[in-house]
Length: 304
Image (cartoon, rainbow, N blue to C red; front, side, top):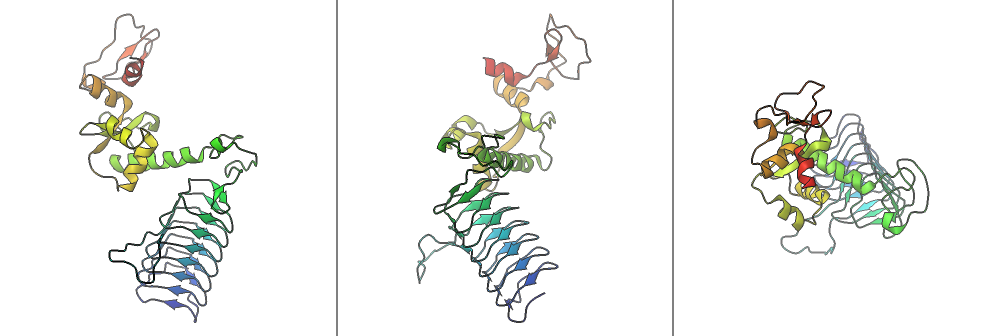
């Protein structure tokens, strides 16, 4: 439904059940999902994309090429920016840098979101906050500038957190930054696996045992240049659009290739002396100990 006083460009694509209230302005190239609501006097600039079930309040401004996920609530008077240094006449080569909002995000009334800010899924932004930095998943921020509220969005406990633990709940130990890292890692594994994450060598599917490998080598040096953190590497892959040159291997195959030059399952069945075998041994599996247990090459390499 489109109100008679609303302006919707002919090239805009509105999903089924979407409502545009009076005085709203929907510009060229805007695309919405199903059952969205665009509030009175709100403006959606060119090429904005909304997911399904997005609710936009009164007087909201969303700049060009902003991406908003599914089930997002945006309160009245929210302003999103796409330029750190706005000018009447932008310089040559100017490129807008709009924010990105993932799924299940709630944004309170009167919030100001800076250019290029990425709000991860499940986050909450309190009314009147000024958000100038990326927001991890399942975190609540308030104030100017926005800072984490001492309340966990998972268990709901409100307790005082030391500054060095501002992203971790003292009650349920939920870590917002770790949740964001897990999301980035899973997306990278899914991309380089072509769907369900698995080791391209042996087919291992347990997420705990999978790793992202540099095909041409130099993985340690590359990770070191990014801060030496696996979370930084997964975030870098996402920012670069998942470039070629990487693959998914389990820790066994990855460690064995680097140390022995081959995977353990590429050799014949091997049961070292002294092992007491009480269960069936899988094909191409190495077992040791009493009782015999599968040998994990990655664990051996760490011990060395």
